[in-house]
Length: 145
Image 1 (spheres, rainbow, N blue to C red):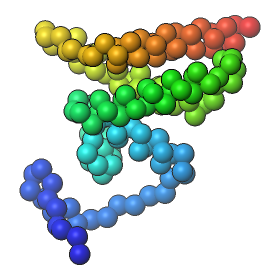
Image 2 (image 1 turned 180 degrees about the vertical axis):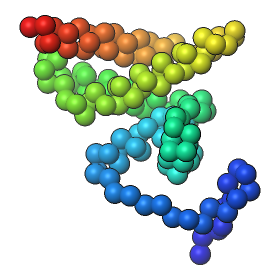
Image 3 (image 1 turned 90 degrees about the horizontal axis):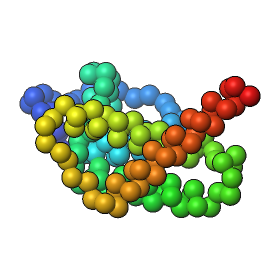
Image 4 (image 1 turned 120 degrees about the horizontal axis):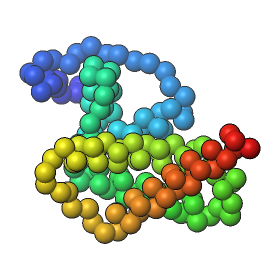
């Protein structure tokens, strides 16, 4: 039998809430809670549902997952020969990471101190920003064309 766990306010968590997801939705949920640095999927879902928004934890797990996702995206981008070959499956993690980066940027701008990001991660983030700009220009061209 599993150990009974109390939440941060010393309440028993003994109610089960379940819902169905497609495999793709489940994969996206897994990616999001890991990228944001949550310890468990349960913590992420409770925060998202009860508070209406989630915050990046800013821990080593988050940095590790960011690096891992960036490496996967980079290898996939290197495999592609043209922009048309890019699938929505590749765009989803890119959008998620950009949302996280924007949230961190807004949070950091409200502080007076600067956050130090290792050069490799900074360079990879800049590649994502350039990709976002390229994709937005491509989308604008398609809508005007």
